[in-house]
Image (cartoon, rainbow, N blue to C red; front, top):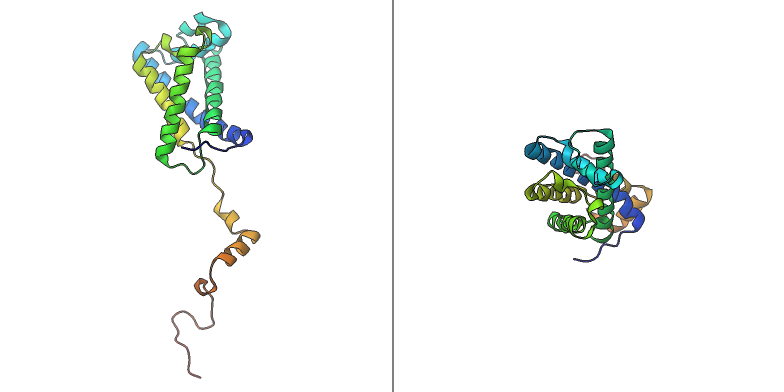
Length: 193
C-alpha cells in the first residue's frame, strides 16, 4: 500500500464528507447500543461532553443540550479529524473496495487505541461509561464503515466531452472506428447509378 498523495486541502474537503458519514453511523450505533445496554440512547452520546463539563458529564444519562448536543458535536469534530488523517495519508482515489475497508479499519483501530490508551481520561470519548467492550467495538466498526463507504467525487462524464475533451478524444480514436452519417441510411444498399 502506497502513501496517498492528497493535498491537505483536498483531504479536508473529503474528510468533511467521510468524517460526517462516519460520525453519523457511529453515533447511531452508540445510541442503539446504549438503548440495549442501559435503556438510554443518549448516555453514550453524552460521553464526549466531559471535554467541556468535566468527567462527571460522561455519566449523564438523560438527553440535554448541555450533554447530548455538546457530546455529539465533540464526537463529530473528532470523527472529522480522524477522517482528515485517513484521507490525507491512506485514502487513494482509485482504491478497490477491499483496500478502502482495510485502511478504514486501520484508522478506526488507531483511533480506538489513541482514545483509550494514550489520551488522558478527561479527553477520552467517555462511551465506556455506558457501554461494554463489544458495543465499543461495534461503534468503532461503524466508524470504519463510514470511512470506507465515503467515495471521493469522480470527474463528471460531461467534462470528458467538453470542447477540449472532444478534440483529445478525436485524436485518440482512429478514423476508421468513428461513425459517419451518409445520405443512404444504414439499411440501404449502394445504388448502381
